[in-house]
Image 1: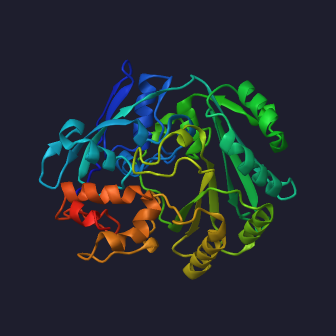
Image 2: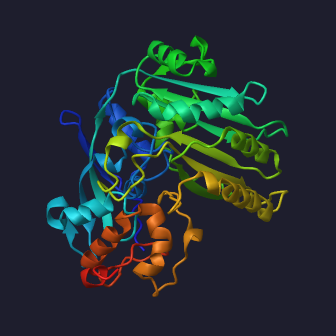
Image 3: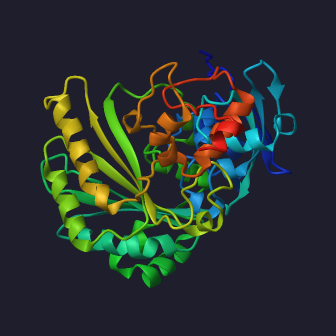
Length: 407
């Protein structure tokens, strides 16, 4: 096992709009370093600042600017990797097949990526955000139904996502809408009044800030914290959790939304995050990188449940709510296969036994994460790590061209 936590160097060239960043760097550290160089450069990555870039990039990297700029992995232009033979390779020496595989094919399968060369993106000096909480009495069910019909077709400059959360005081569940707009509040207000007037966005709901302040905002730190809070690498308080992901290709019927909200009245309920796709993601081929969830995806969801070590409600109660919700959603999410995001790894999709991992067994989870790209990933693995030195429960298994011809 290799600890990459100390690999934290960042070198930014704001003139060329590129950066080299080592895999142990947290997203918060990367975002902060970019903001120190420029107020109009950014990088499209995740919203959790304590996640390290090596993990995010290796699975693709979804975030608040994905609709505008694509995945984190879509903006990687080189890398340094240690292969199974101990060689240090870059894009030219590793070849395009391996370079393709490490940008979204999951971590821990092909080698140890020690650093990444990324393309920075141009953004306005001022962006806008809002958070609106809607109760059942305020029409939350009809609002989320309208959201799924309009938000995937919004301008690439707009991300509007929401979460369904239980009321912690035992009341009714709520829908919490959050938005990021790459522009000023006037533009966001005008856009929302035309395309989603039912949400009732008002001038006082909208806030303008720098991009780096919006990173702090979406990380949940609140307005009082300076951007230096992004440099905090300390682990979060211990809390057990279970999470799974899904992708939605067809509209969920209106009556089903009512049943989804009803299930948040159960003791031990968790939270579901719904995030719009579309935008530039719909224009990129699903084989461009291992991450295939592009055209035709309306939005993704992540179903999460948390419980403390000393939970008054038993662990089985929390897991039971999660599993029942996942089963209930099955008819309304993607099918054949039911897709999942590799960075929300779910070992229940198919556990492999050490020393007995092979392509056919691994297809039970591999095609959920990667669809048709899984076979190509396995062929790359067969070329660069035929002895399967880099192994874990859901690592890519080696497949060899002679075998592939018959599969």
